[in-house]
Amino acid sequence: MKLLWVLGFMGMVLCRRTDGFADVNGTKEEDLHYTESNVYGYGPNGYGVFSRPLMVGLTLINGAAAKGAVCLDGTLPGYHIHRGYGSGANSWLIQLEGGGWCDTIRNCVYRKKTRRGSSAYMEKQIPFAGILSNKAGENPDFYNWNRVKVRYCDGASFGGDSQNEAAQLYFRGQRIWEAAMADLMSKGMRYANQALLSGCSAGGVATVLHCDEFRAMFRGTTRVKCLSDAGLFLDVIDVSGRRTLRNMFRRVVSLQGAYKSLPWSCTNRLNPTLCFFPQHLIASVKTPLFLVNAAYDTWQIQASLASPTADPNGLWHECTKNHARCAAWQVNFLQGFRNQMLRAVSGFSRASKNGLFINSCFAHCQTERQDTWFSQNSPHIGNKGIAKSVGNWYFDRVNIKAIDCPYPCDKSCHNLVFR
Image (cartoon, helix red, strand yellow):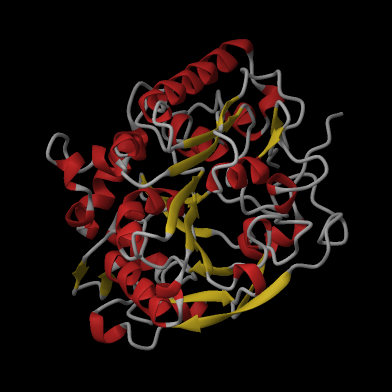
């Protein structure tokens, strides 16, 4: 049986339920992050074959409240920072945390009682692994950079700017983004000679939304690029013939006032809901951008393509939990999803400044996990792994446009299987 992977220490980050994907017939769908409890294959000692990760403490942004930059419940936003040294002392990697969205008052009220909506519930320390690792053998190009994880507590991909007084909800994602960047600039990031903005899932959406803003913060001589991991959410028709994700994004954009933060280059030709989908933004991002995405993104399969509301009879239930249980007609449907993803990046990929790594795996967020980011048997396309591909692109060593052959050809995948 094929070995299935998930790194145990990521369970420390992702083992709690994320808080409110969508309000469906009065019930809440959890955001589908992947954990020890619902995925087969994690290491029995909690850390698999990798060394114990560096634990990094939480820093609250003390000046944020004066700017109205607060979490859903009004608490201060925060980040985790580990300082760079040596050749990386003036290089900065910023990672925007992911964790779904909240699209209704009910969901956001629930979310503000969790780490996704309040710093009062955030972990005081989190492990830095994958692209945040401080070990050269685990993160060869960025291990000695200043590495920052910005916590996600607004529910609109760092993009909202509104509030609901009756429910005591603060939708201040855009202000949190600005306050975090201002605080980091004051702590030395303004002197950076190299900078990389990254993010996974909802943080990958935020990376695309804020990429050009990030570039504008630095001197023209600073090398600035952006990396979006598992952020290529597609506006696709689900198994019921409807558009689950478009409807949810419409509610997020409206409720949280995110339309104010969307790029004018998109909103001048499309409605704001469509401009929350990165597929409509990536070609117009001026800053060099790299996309890492699984062609069969498990979050999108479970929560967008074949969610419980789109599949009330459960015909897709087993397939969404384990790709090996998909019938031929279901695999054909998923191949159509992959084809739509490739069409969505076709124009983007023609620009020499941009990069791609789209592997034919059933995965989500591959830069945050050590086993998928950089290890002896990490996923690869040809002879290209994810960490080396990103590094080669960032440092202009090699032009990377890696697109995998269709499932089931890739035997290097660390596919996710759910209980």
